[in-house]
Length: 155
Image 1: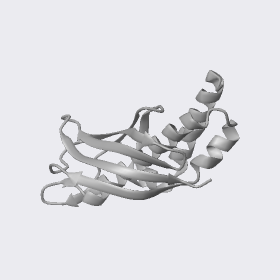
Image 2: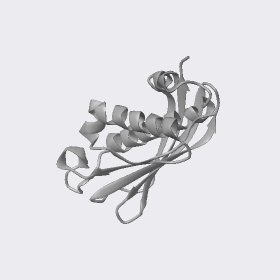
Image 3: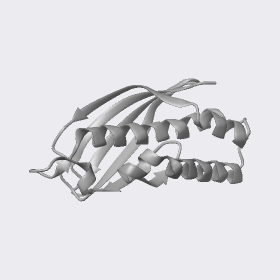
Image 4: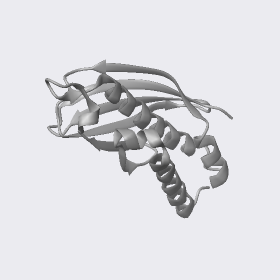
């Protein structure tokens, strides 16, 4: 069985990996909370993320990317629950072998806001595929977009 120290170590390493991915830094994504059942990332509005300069709203690609990245992180956290009997090293190695199979995004309203919160939780996690539900809210707690992603883990 997994010891709390190992779970804490795993979460710490995953968070460190997330911070080292250059594209996450381009988006300005930061991990706010990280657990097997729920992941939350945040980012601030910046000029580089604007898709409509007249209306000053988020670019749709930024929204899709934030949903994809946060969904992938949720998948990584959910698969570790199935791997509790394996070593931390094996679990971390598997985390590097994730890819997005499918991402559906529904844009519900324009991306107005100063700060955005992306939450994700697993709908189902198998041995190789995790299906994740993702939401993006603005700083007024308005739901901007939702997504469902399927993520694949190579062995």
